[in-house]
Amino acid sequence: MNMTNLSPEFLNRRSFIELDARARAQCLFDQGTSTELVGPFDRIESPWLPRQGIAPQSDDGCIIFKGKIGGSPAVAIAFEGAFQGGSVGEVSGAKMTAALDLAARDSEAGKPTSAVLLLETGGVRLQEANLGLAAVAEIVSSALALRRHAPVITIVAGTVGCFGGMSLAAGVSSYTIMTREGRLGLNGAEVIEQESGVDEFDASDRALIWAIHGGEQRVGMGLADSLVEDDADEIAATVRGYVRAGVPAKHRSEQVEFYRKRIAAIDTSSQIDPATLRQKWSNSKGRVR
Amino acid sequence: MSEQVGLRGRVWFKILAGNDTPDNDDPKSVLSRTADFGSEPALFLCVVPDEDSRFPCVRDGQVGLEEAYALATHIRKVIGEDADEPKPQKRPIIAIVDVKSQAYGRREETAGIFFAAATAADAYASARMAGHPVISLVAGHAFSGGFLTHGYQANRILAFDDAGITIHAMHKEAAARITLRSVAELDKLGHEIAPMSYDVRDYARLGLLFRLLHAQDPQNPTADEVAEVRAAIAAAIVDARSGTADLSNRWKSDVARRTRKGTLAVRAALEAQWMNA
Image (tube, rainbow over all chains, first blue to last red; front, top):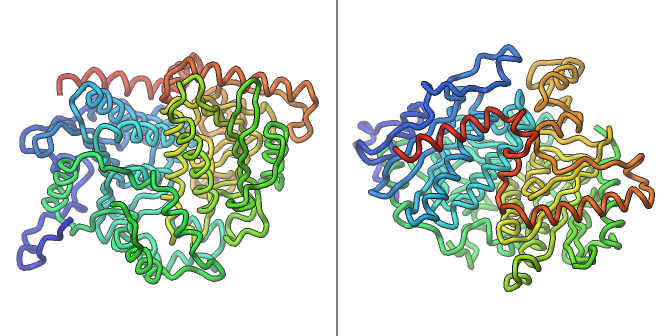
């Protein structure tokens, strides 16, 4: 996708990252077409947090909007990074799965309904551990079922990033949009430092973190599709472009042999330099997308 | 953590698939074989430790880049080979699960382990949606991203009713540290709050399992115990073939109706509001 020009307009730019999850989801839709579903007034909260002395939130940190994007039916599902780190609990996870399932049902009935996942999440909510992990498996399954009929578009924009099991949801998406500020990976630097030691990953090395997980790197190495500015209008326009493009001929996560060969070619005798890897992968021929 | 990770997986792979020699194209950590199961062939898959792996952070039985792509390759091959078969003839895929976790390594993050994991989950789910019965046998540990990559997309999940089984989002020490609790507090909490528990019997209360299996020592099963496991897998295959190709059995089961009230409430509310939006 093209980048908008950076000229004086950036002063008038409306930051996407500074919006909360509700406003982020809403700004993607055509004016006046969107409605929030199972919102805070429905008060379906986590049944598990209060029993552990943690205040639940009446939307469980997952916000759903349904409406039209570029004239086509769409649903946006946004995780709120400010509530429990955007973590996936039983209710927030089931909300996302249910929205994907209903979009798939409409799509199968002849009304293709795209889904936009706004992933601002550290992954499974450890206070709901096994139901969070199960929810992630269900989300991935439902995203895969929907993407046969309508595109599943992931946005990783904000400072929380997209980590843990939810990075697999990004991985199976039809298209992934990232900002430079966004990060995408299975394990964050802190987790690796804790599990494998500071020699493996120094979590205080900010430059290294962005060199590995950052949006510029992920798009540059071909594991995400669009690098965008932190601009709500540009992001909405990019989403409209992907809704219009529809289901890709082949999804990235189906191209196993292509990516397996890339891994086979990596020298693992020392750590992998992210910039060199990006250059190699961005130049490789045969990339379908 | 037990130092036994992977041993039980290998034992059960050998019992069910008959031979545990890795495929030439695969890392030594991936066991894959099509073998007869009852009256039909089935694809068996397992991830085991490889202490010589060229990726240091998978040597204790973690699922890394090569493991994920190898699993995805084998599953996609079977989907392709059986593409023209009618659904009842599509090969069952049996994932034998005994994995410590995903790999926690810098090499893995740099080369996009999140995406490798996604290709394996995609392959398992695509097989299920194409009509292959996908069955997981949890023989030991099933942790976090390791389980999401290998086994959690199954139509039906079986696990031994045994203290050596742990299915969880994060190992105890790390979960205690992150939730600011002691390991003892975490254990106590687990018995009150089922999704937090590290005990497979509490896990069974979530409604995600098809059946609990019995073996005195799952690493050295008797002939009768092997027969029971085979019968349970066969029953899971029949049940998967007669059910839907999605994962809805996990929240519609009788057990889930008691524990996953939040899931069911949110699904009902969204469905009711969806039509009018």
